[in-house]
Image: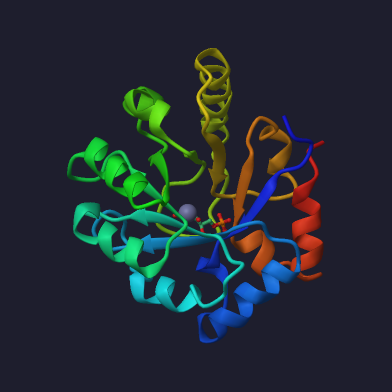
Amino acid sequence: MSDTFLIAPSILSADFAKLGEEVEAVLAAGADTIHVDVMDGHFVPNLTIGAPVVQSLRKIKNAFLDCHLMIEEPEKYVEDFLKAGADNITLHVESKGDIATLIKKIKEAGCQVGLTMRPATPLETIRPYLKDLDLVLVMTVNPGFGGQSFMEDQVEKIRELAALRDAHYHPYKIQVDGGVSEQTKSQLQQADILVAGSFIFKHPEGYKKAISLLKEKV
Ligand code: DX5
Ligand code: ZN
């Protein structure tokens, strides 16, 4: 296990009027990947951004674009995200459609694939897919909005995922999303990637300081 986390700023908390500059700034400040929260107003009660924004951000060549699809019918849109140049696409197991087929389609396009679940959804639901995944995302807030409080009762899923990975030699990375901060990271030692929106983009001492505060495992 690495002694540092990979850090994925969630652009949901960025200034959308200068999104490209914001992405360049967090990359210069040490971000490892860029987390793009895609919401359709149905799967979650909020509406954010779609594939055209990913296509524009693709011009920033060194940005690894990690797209978290909080949408009801991913099979309608996955193709668009692949064409737009996503580097990873994370699906919700509760979305409509055949998850196994979508996972296969994403992988065949040469894109990495992740799977996640709402906090109320048991880990069991994603178990059949674990061997095929590059990433498993543990949601530590109810998907839909930035700036919510970290749900401690989800930490157990991280432990279970780490144990399953060891037991079965699965290759996936464990990512955590929601309420991640300098205070909550101590509970996330077995994770590999921390997503953080408000902690990074609203930090009074700037992006570099915020990322350095999250980076080291304690
Ligand atoms: C919530 C999103 C998160 C969100 C995290 O549905 O998936 O990525 O931006 O924001 P913070 O870090 O502010 O909880
Ligand atoms: Zn997210």
